[in-house]
Length: 264
Image (cartoon, rainbow, N blue to C red; front, side):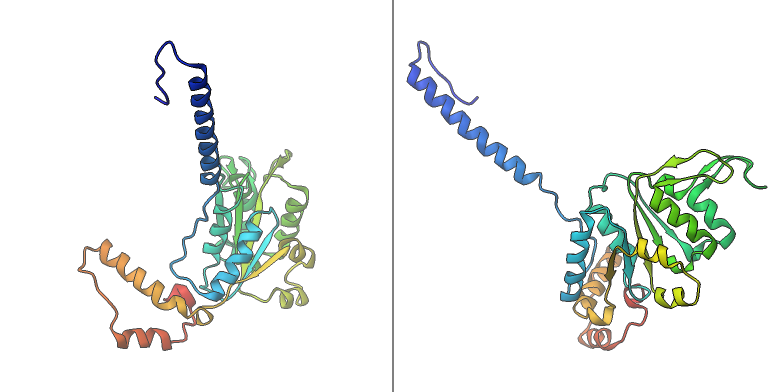
């Protein structure tokens, strides 16, 4: 109940009540608009100046559909960055599909990416959608992109340029709408010089390059990540809460962490 007027009511009282309700509604609408502002979804366990700089670029890039190339040592959290960009983009309600080029046998990469029709090859007993189709409308993350066979790179380039794919063994073209994020710890410039990576594909993937600093450049995060991981494991295994001694903390901070966050 907003107002209660006794009959016969005075017209001025009614007008005052209407004005009061109008003000209330305007305040509500302002509050709703403020609450609708999307919150940043952040799965990082620590924070540092170097991480903030990288995330600042990621925040700006996430609002676009531009291809992003994540660069950095192995274990720095490239897939976490890719997921962060997707979750803070306009595509967040659509699929996020991650595929590691180094984990797929060379002869299966093409069918894994683009899919195939029944009978396309000996073992194709039924049709299967590829990762491009599964990611349609969302984000496709291609990890270890430097490991992609040269023969498949031209097909990837065409898919990105034409925004369409064709399953193996099918004459039908499938339109796609995806955002591609790729990652590598290799030097793609050297790969291009050695004839192992297409220069035109490199420029297509490298619209926005984002270098992710190593853990030794983000030392402020070491204890934060270690403590949160320790707490999570104590909760997981029903252990009494444990803590790092001063000596353990010194050891953690003095180590070089060549395997980065994955090693930690």
